[in-house]
Image (cartoon, rainbow, N blue to C red; front, side):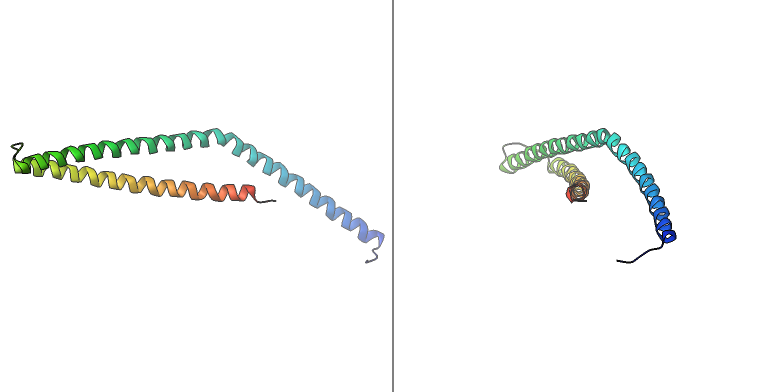
Amino acid sequence: MTVHTNAEMHAEHRLWNSEHSMWRDDIQLWREEHQGVLAELKQLEEILREHEHALDSHLEAIKSHEATEQKHEHALAAQESGAEARNLGNMTSMHQAEAERHQQQREAHERIKKHHHTVIARWSLLMKGMQDAM
């Protein structure tokens, strides 16, 4: 244990008081930031609900695309078997349109996938950070 003079002890107390003041200022700032985060929770929930709606809409678009593709496949099979007299040019243009819609679905799926993975990765990091002991 180091022996201090009265002057050294007074100086150390002034330093500590200065630190206490800075710490109180830090806590005040942190509380304000924390209140801002709490205020944004409702907005975050709305964004997550929108994301959920986008996933539902994307699934419906996939189902619709699948149904259209199956109709085209059945029409193609019927045309090949002679059950339906369809112009090959008409079938080709239908197929081209279907191929374009499929490419659009592929691109939409990749955009949603990338966004979803980003959201979940950031969420996981946030939760881990919040759950770790201070």
